[in-house]
Image (cartoon, rainbow, N blue to C red; front, top):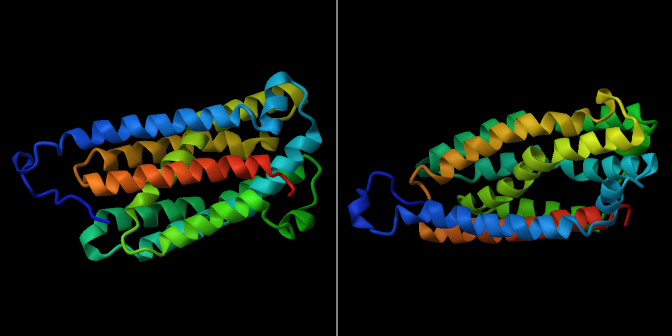
Length: 236
């Protein structure tokens, strides 16, 4: 895994300027595939057609929490594996881990607010998709200079920025939920929108070379599939 040397003049590589445009085009394709898959997820289909139940929402929160609690730890682990030559990425990962490490508490409050048991939630286990997703992220974070995880963040933060508030509004519309019962999803529209902007700044900064771009796209593809699997395998 390598990052392009930002001190090298662009004339040394006539293709360097094309990397961000190509990378975003490829990531857009990954996102489009994810959107198609999400449209086939049973709980999201019921949400869209208005037949979703309060129990469905509780199940969704219960299953998401078991993976959300791992978010800050895998980001922190990735930060610890960036060397000094990748200082900007290490700093960004440290900031991101600090911002994420209380997210599961918001989700827990929403779960209790819709009648769930906090003790049962905290005693829960990951479903098959969550196990696969967390396992992949921790494994990747252990690599030296794991810049490919920008692809994971593209998917996970993108879901928060683009879909979470939409889902929250629909749950409120169908189930009559209050803001304090969907706070986790509402919060992530703004927070993940900021994170997505920060990530895009890195992707267009000149730090990403062609090899790293390939790894970012591949990581995005894997995480997109595993995140959808997490939603498909609720309670399994």
